[in-house]
Image 1 (cartoon, rainbow, N blue to C red):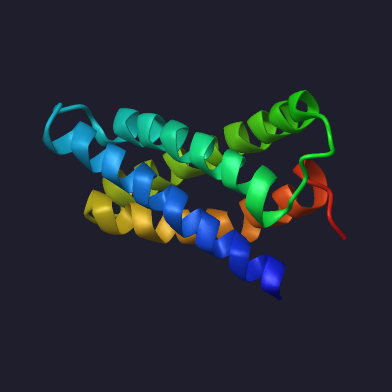
Image 2: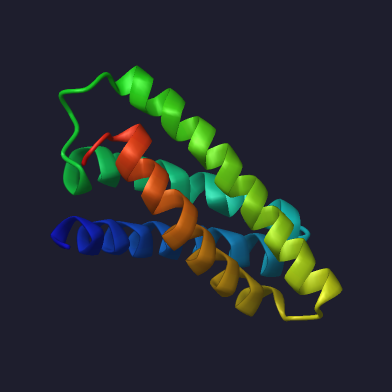
Length: 125
């Protein structure tokens, strides 16, 4: 349970950076929300990888290159799910982009990211 809590805290910190970057890109730079989601997710991913490797899973003994490559694959899937979810909830369902981002981020985080980080990227039982 402690691993899950640390992972969720790491995700919360990473998501803060993701949201901050996304909202700044939409509101200040005037990018579209899908493009802003990609940029925000990139910043959040870098933060999450570092926290996951060093603090959450304490997986520094494993190859950084291998973990980085596996993380990249998982992140690309996550990015696709987030972008698709943003499009579906915002364009098709008419939900404001910030609420859409919250709903999609939580769903993808719990059911996709955590599971694959734990079992594949940082390989804990």
